[in-house]
Length: 471
Image (cartoon, rainbow, N blue to C red; front, side, top):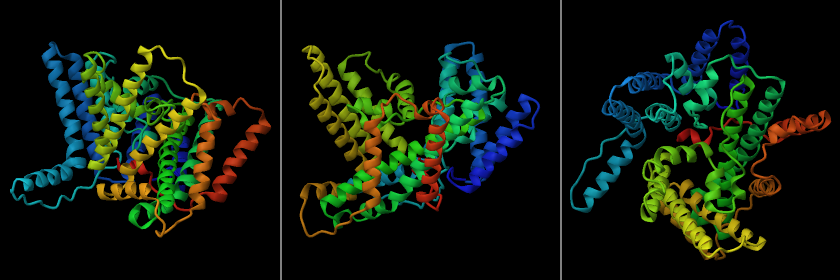
């Protein structure tokens, strides 16, 4: 079930209605566990058993970590959780990539390696629910949270359907305390949640889905188009992936809000970032903060000198790129952002050491332009099918020769204009959905009418899968 489909709308309404029938908190949570597994089984029945088995193991390991008598025992149980979760992720997501890379390396030294066909279906959302479960055992080990009291609550934490397949990555410290009492949304929360859902559908159905086919055509044949068309395709993909992923996050957060649960914000106008560090404070916030707390800081962070600081930063971004998929293109994407982050840290240190004043407006504009340029170059490798295609597209952007095919997409042009105007017009720390409920009734009615009219008039008729389902 895709969030923008009629089937999901019926499913969500049914969950809301049936949930209200239960008279006890325990019964309600059991029902939500059941509903969440039904939601996941709409994608693949068998892999629901994978989530259940992994969740049971982490629940047991979390209790063993908390009850262990020695540091060695606690560490051993944590390692077991790490091995299990990362092992599952490696088997399903990276095995073909590892085998193919190994075969290529061996061929360089004259060793022939027979590659067998690896027919493994990738479980949807596997990167999200493994990271979410891992955060629980790590936080129990760090004594930031007490073990979950019941298996039922832990199963619900891992598999809660709004965020199950594409985030945001909700940590145990954020969600488990909300299961202690019955969650009920008041009228304001329900209105805010519905506004978020409507905004998410506009982003996905009206913008992302409408530009996707045009972007696909350009990226499928980068050597066949002229530079303006290629640039249009890159800008179109930047808009597509933002509206697709932030649209999913808006709908997920909105559904949870309607039910009385709170999820962390996942996007804050990332394309208005003034530097690359600022971009990562605004883009996929739940992942970037997860990588910071569970990877970058354990690697050493900025506590062991400048060299270790930069190595930790680069490794975090390279592994963050690999998290997105088993491809060298994703590693290169992570490397581009790693280099940019290190360059920004060096520049910031240089400015501080010379006690330079705050940058002027034109320097801020140049900084935003440079940041956007780095992000766009990264998106080329993120979206391109192969390294060769990415290279062809980059070379095509540099040539600006006449004679190649041209493609003018009104959908991309309009979407780019709308998204970037919104990024300029709204401050990154403002939450539109929370603000609109404080407006007058006439303004709220006009706003909601506009959103619904836009969805009906311009929304895609097909419920396309979200991009991040593949991760």
